[in-house]
Amino acid sequence: MLEALNVCLEVDAQPGTEEECLYLLREVNFQVPQGHLMAIVGPSGCGKTTLLKVIAGIIEQTDGALKWENRDLKEEEDLHPGELGYVPQFSVAHDLLTVEESIANSMALRTQLPGTDEFEPKLDKILAITGLTDLADRRIKVLSGGQKRRLGLALELVTNPCLLLCDEVTSGLDPKSEREITELLRVLSQENPRRVVINVTHSLASLEAFDSVLVMYQGRLVYHGLPKFLTHYFTVEHPEEVYLRLTQRDAQSWHESWQKKRDYYERMLLGKSATAEKKADANEEDHEEYEAIAPEELPSVMSQVFTLLQRRWTIFRRDKGQVWLHLAMLLGFPLLVVIFALDGIKPLKQLSQRQDSDIMYEMQQKAQHQIDQLNAGGLVSGLIMLQVVLVTLMASNNAAREIAGERLILEREKLGGLSTLAYVISKVLFLGVFVLAQSIWMGIFVDMITGGLPGDLLVKLGLLTLVSAAMTSICLGISGMCRTPEKATILSIYLVGFQLPLSGAVLSLPDWIEGVVNPFIAAFWAWSGSLRSMSDTAFYDAVKKVTETSLVTPELAAFVLLAHVIIGLSMAYVGSKGSQWE
View: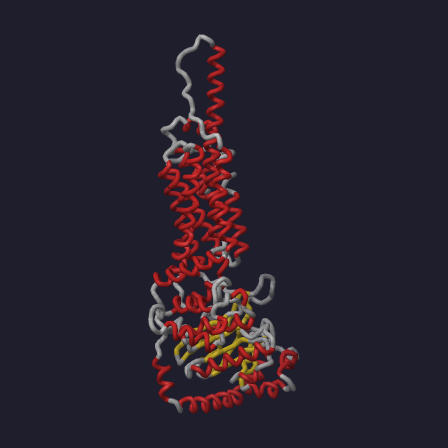
């Protein structure tokens, strides 16, 4: 049995209001027996979804207790991820995957069935019971609203949960689809004698299909009983009139009225449930079978990493727009760099130390040498910085939307037992391929076309790779901290946009600002370390003539960029672990 005892949820009130706190839920009490289908209804903003999230453990109540099979879910051990199924309002699968792939991925992330003889039969059973067998090869993006709701249920059935919570899975559907989903919920509630199915809905059209109806109003529970008594309790002719009737009294008054009549309606509700339970016990063997089933054991972290990585590559391959964009940047950005050095980098001539009798000629030679040095220094410094900035731009594009773009799917999968560590590792491995390909190809291609930039090629490739990894990690961290991909993209663009002007490559900063800003500008360290690697060449003096910014050693640059990587990945982990439900 699921039991709520004086559940309250209190939050701080908005500044400027007289009240110090606001109750989203207040003194909510109910009992739901197993093998039961319950609807939570009420006007918009009454606390329906909030109550469901409290039951699911997404939000923790500030007072009261929630009990499952006499186990306090706050004080004792929470429900195992395999015991809980939560179907949110939003789409819960990637558009470019098929129905079958989505369910198979959910099974791989939440169970150890893949690779066993039980995998295919269970997958087929889930498709059959949710009516998705004929749609198994269809991609998610072409499914209708009702079909996506069925898929949401299918993804939660992979662990055979005993508590199935559904948020608005019937809302926004045509009457036929709404009846079909409601009937599916009824089948699911009766399939497992231990299961409780709860559906939050704004619709009052199909309440007769539910075992009980719980009505919320302004955070208060104002009715919980059999659907057939709903109109009698609220003294209306049709269920659709209940919401209008609620506005005729305040929530406190409705709650007090319910407290007086609660025992009568709940006795009838629990009495009917006891009769249904006796019928279910007639088939004792089936009941014992369900009692004996332990929650599905979660797969290992590395197993989840492999599943996530495989899924991410499948999505990437099918997103033709992203594939072509990455190819265009991979091939086009190096071409953009070499346009400025199509004639190659000419070697610098040493200035003759011999004293010439023609003073005018000697002065002309010195002036020409200085011009050559300035031109060469500007060209080399500019080429290095352009490489660095374009690599950071590609890194930003790679990572900015990587977590924020699938935030809501991540939240559902974490609730189902997905390890945050496995999730972040899968992102590192996926993005690491782009980091290596983009930075190494950029360095080698530019070096080949220009005839070889001065300095150690391996050092320059290493710093390009590190600056790409640093920017990728920081942008991944921003993506993890943001709720929406649009916000993450804007912040990442700003971050890349400041790299060039604040690097000191174009204009040097005042000394007191330079020391404060430089640690945060990844481009500065890659650019500066690469130029310093030319210290044993004739170009080093030329480079120093065109920049007043202090150049750092490649070792120090590598150390700082590695620190950027660690900070970015830490941000990604913390951001991914934190809850950002709608």
